[in-house]
Length: 400
Image 1 (cartoon, rainbow, N blue to C red):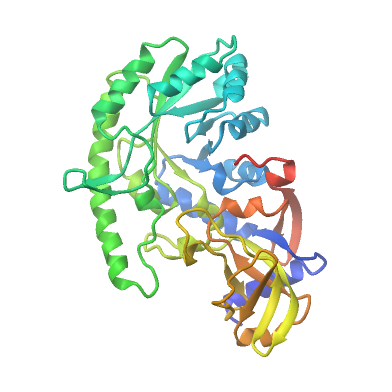
Image 2: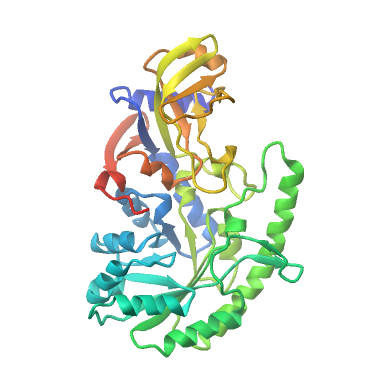
């Protein structure tokens, strides 16, 4: 029996009394992945990206471990909800236009102390001030540095289109603008190198592309390390008591942690290890989050049909954004249908061993987005479900 076959047997036994569709998290794999993130961070605290987990119980579990500190959230509404739930250090990693949320933040001392908001433009300060509605609390501010690699005089850009602040001087200018403005305080810098942390460098069957990605990432890491250090020095000249400099992501933890200018690492997807993280040379994680769909039809030899399963991930559309049938091994999509909203045909010799009602286990392409499809996660230890915990959706929250 292969290790994957053994896992399938465990998961089937653990969920034998539960009807699919359902989602699980293997706690042994989850904890092992957490330990690996801490190891790769080399002593720097790991701030957990909540959008990659989307389950309060598992956020609490990982933050209880040594080496983890604070959350990185994705909307202001989520940030306020987490702060009200007892999380005391929440960094909002994206700008917000949530006026009602800002009114609440600036009127509540507890929330204002727990939540740090992200800006990259003075206009965002104007929006916050206009939303205060009498709230006088000082807003904790983090500045975002653009990490993209610009080549050939800026004619070629590699990296996500995030902050307009690319140079250390631009970041320092915004820090000075915040320092002059009552009601705000710069406490941190964030720089997320998604083209390094979120792009696989060992894609199966694509050796030339993989080598090109590795060369690009090596160049990007060198350029960013130098520019990020200069940016931190420039901002510290304005804000000597800067609290943190956040960088990284699951795919670049050890590289970013090696930079002296960085004080903490962001990571979250590495806890669940979705399929997009199969294509990395820098680390190997254990798939921890899976979902199961039931076999409902057997249309013919070498094919079964499961209920639902069409859960594409965000990003540029492509086959790499689709879930993959994982257990039993040897199943693949029908190229004419793919994974569907209501039904998904699966081809392969393994189909002939599946009966009506059997479970087929899938891995999602991205981490936390799986939780937008399920109200609960069944936590598996060995071959037993030891707890069932709600996702954000299960608690009535869909923040985006």
